[in-house]
Figure 1 (cartoon, rainbow over the protein chains, first blue to last red):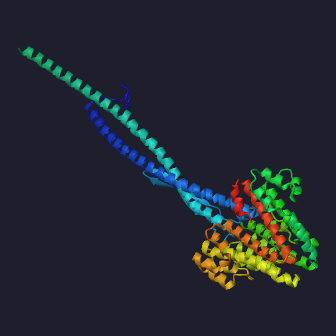
Figure 2: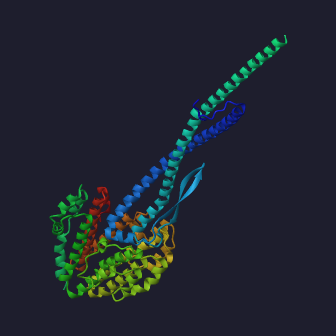
Length: 208
Length: 335
């Protein structure tokens, strides 16, 4: 019999009890995984909705900021912009930290170092620099959300696969084995009864 | 006598691109079209000399032409006027110094060619190559010790305190305007006041942009106050100091009403448009002077302003085309 248990099936009452305990445990796990799958699905849908809104808003702001940067470039000329760019000492530095959401490790982005813009720039460049700095945090939030979605979707797929495997393969297989053992035990019991009857009859005949 | 200089300027002004040409440049579809339109103009020879040309090379050509035009006036100007013009042209020198200085702050090595410096070798005694080779910002400032900008060394403390190039830049500008006002005495009496007015209008604009940084970009009040350039035209220093402590946009616009056209854009953080509005305002100022009398030195100033504005408009168009900015945008930013 090819089952999830392989060749280790023992048609004994003890083994049957052990299997039934195991199936109960697996069914409980299946129920929890189903709950997790539903919750992940809900979380994914709501995150996708948020991403859709935030992303289109950010894209609009980004386009505007880029247009302003290009206008600034054209207005001041390349020399002014390049030299202003060269005057920025500190660059952006980001730390990626793990954060657990429903047991899934999602990245959490933290700005460790950012360029200081206050008191730094002259006309035109300061407005452009501030505009991009405002975008930076929102850009990181979107990045965080996108990778969170990616990881939730990945985990949802895995959970779904587990739920399906339990539902369609593991639990039915176990039930099949249980049924097989029960049948075997019934069969053995029946044989035992018949054997007892025959022995009783034989003893009875001898006495007579 | 400077009559010859003024007469020359009347002739030279015909070499500037007409508004129609600027407009046709604005509506071109490709970069090659820009080159084709510029080919028969004064820029044609410089364009033809280069094999491969892009927006940045074109920007250098425009800068070169601007400096050539300025230098030509020195050749035809009488001694006294020449002295004033040489001082006036120091604004390009200051821009070059600042471009190099900003690059020194981050200590990231950048090729000098990337700063698109004004080619002022013939009118400036500053050696930009030597400055470009200095190790850091403070060493850079020290190279200015034996130049007319030696006083700027005093601003090192401010530079250290705020770790910003602004104190150095504005100290250089303060020195520049001091020198310009000193050489105003070289001009004929009747022109002195008119030219001074134009320069002070420019200072007003500089101060406007400085002052707004306190309320819009939260710059330190103490720093802003130190950056103000004296000799304003319409905005007195006490008014400007009052504006530094004002947060309400309405109040700022009221206190600085002569420049409300500029400030309304600045307050909404559209500084490119504010900058264009400021340049238009300066153009109006110089045009008013020209209408009153086209046979005095203000006509030379008018010509110089037009040369600078043409350079800026052409640079805007070339770079905007390079970056595919929609043509409507050039017209909004055209001076």
